[in-house]
View 1: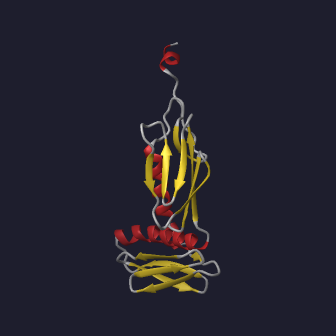
View 2: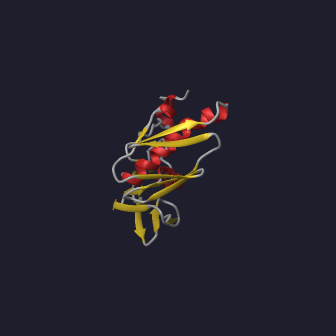
View 3: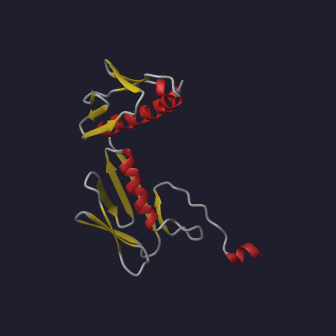
Length: 180
């Protein structure tokens, strides 16, 4: 039995869950998300709680129970509270600009890098060295943040590049320090 899969999901007020066949639809104040249930998994709603149950005891069904519970929990949290990722830009002359539906990043390359913002995400730049990405789908928010970070990840000698807020960059000693 999956310990995570057996835990019920509490529904906050204002969040509705509908099951149509294998399709799960979660609606809340921030939006609506859909998910296709895998074979062998069913969703049961009881008052203000959701239970994820297996229809069979196959290895695959046991594996999917915890996964589906985590995904549905993230859907419920996303439509009620939303998700947020913050990125910091470290480096002299490195900056970010938000124009219409694109991010323009000056990161020491010969040209500014343009990154188109997906329509389901909200991106803001509180300062020229901070990027805030918000949305209702945890995977989409984290994936877009990873794509932006991948443009120029922090390097290990000076720490220059794009990093997550609060991320600790392990720094290496330079060549001269390593010999001495």
